[in-house]
Length: 492
Image (cartoon, rainbow, N blue to C red):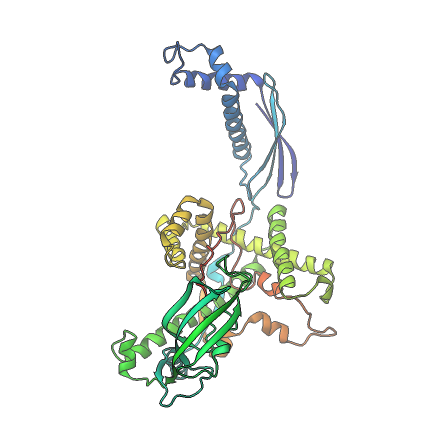
């Protein structure tokens, strides 16, 4: 075996590795002998099958197995002998091999940069905090009350208006024939709620109790039920009564209906939820300040492949958002070259921060337990009512999806670790200041000799200076796709 380093440019390392034919043949023979001890062939006792027959029957599959094992072992040896830590999955290419001849392959790898994290005990950070004002609790309470509408039959039969509810029976028909899922009796429909397909509720505005209304609609082209998508339908609607929303009285009785002991307990629960939201915003601001300080304190080369991969993701997102916003690249006030240079800088920052956080976690033995990953999988599964078991099992079967859940947990633990070492000072701010987007605030500042640049929304979301640093793994993982939701006929 011969390992020759052919390139050592920056963080890139290239090797040519040659494994002698005799060594390959020895491994193949050893593996065939092992197979012969277990395999049963007609006319031969186990362990007595001649090597020539074993080679004839299993030679190709065993050769493939041996080659894969040898390439992996020799690649790892090249890394270990040179004390290299890959930043990404190495690229391996077999350049020469024929049976009976030497195996030759190349190994291209980008290695982790050599750097030392800063002394975080010297890091000074400011954490903005805001108090929950009574007015905010009252506003939230009124909003909850508004969602708990109690409809009552109108005192006199009048024409309905938006915001009223109708008690109706309806039968949906296609070409005069009722279709499955298109009928209901005693259904309460709030006009303006947009719970039915477009055009349905609007045609019932002005109806009175006792009216029969023929509602004509066209199902959307992308409707969930294929047999209804794009079809014109007629709904025969019987209006039994018009109902209007009664004002909800906010008192102890209202609180008990929501499962709380009394109004004071409901207010405490609301205050707790708002405090949790404020705490999340405070944490995001602290994290952002931390990442800014870390980016300023560290300057080391990053693996080119990782930077390019991060840039490709950012640029793809930028182009997608341009398309969604109906804009074009030439509409921007910067050239494509200038934009790419700017995004490449953002990509480099993201990668550097990701490597830095990973290194802090490594040298301080910060790990994510399987129990923590399981809890994250359960939380994800709860987002799909009725499909929880299927989603959970999907995560269990796909390690790359678990890795996607593990990465943010690991990052949060590293951020918490750094926060404990740093000096964190709380600063009281208004709720408005706590909720400000720092990017928008920066864009609002006047710029000398140049108007504020017009960029698509992707610009902000691409910048690692917002909430999160990049999640790094040896290889990119595919994102889980959400299952398509089913839709009932007439309802959205």
